View: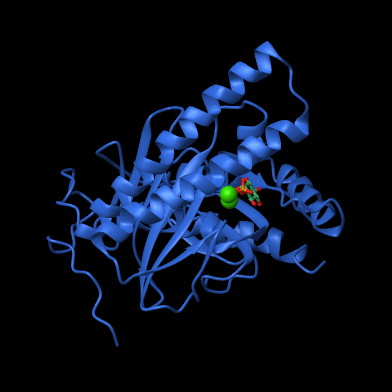
Length: 288
Ligand code: IPD
Ligand code: CA
Ligand code: CA
């Protein structure tokens, strides 16, 4: 079994408010995510300008979005390789290492592609490091707001250097829920709508669908949402944000309550207290 990278400090308690020294893996993840974000921000500005000036058609936007996506992934991988040349990569665009690789980096260079393509400033870069299949550290960047979300196993969840925790909502009528829709427009979409209807019947405050899974998960960790579910996510969508969420005191499983692995699956995330009531609803509709 390969030895995993050791963070510099021992695990911290929930009351610790000072961000521990980052491990070398977290430093690399941060540098890499910023390199990706710089590329996305440039392309996003170009898209906005093109939209105003020439009102280009959808297909023309799509080409630029794909270019931004691929360039950002290359920049992220290049940055990590500077520090860890022997490590492997699982990225949405062009890297396909096996999920059980000893030292694995899981990357979504652009999460929220549809927002990006429509000039909506709500997208993210997501970079996570796993060792022997176990989550070690993760970074989610929101370039539009300048927000950095980081977490390392046993060292808390940090938002721009501030320690954060999930909310303490214990019942569904106290809380706001987020959901995601995969690109499917058939049975999966209907199942999602049916689960949302049932959640509304429980008198939740509302449903939000922001279109960037990594930021949806992060926002459960920030205490804005009591829970989030989606019937199909890929490992790069949740690899980094799941570490942030669990370090913030949240819980994440499949929509059937099984442990999450680095494979494409359903995802249910919560503040922990709402996991069971949400699971009862989302599980009922998960066979489609
Ligand atoms: C998508 C976003 C979206 C979620 C989709 C994902 P992409 O990722 O995270 O919020 O609903 O299921 O595929 O395609 O923008 O990287
Ligand atoms: Ca994604
Ligand atoms: Ca993506």
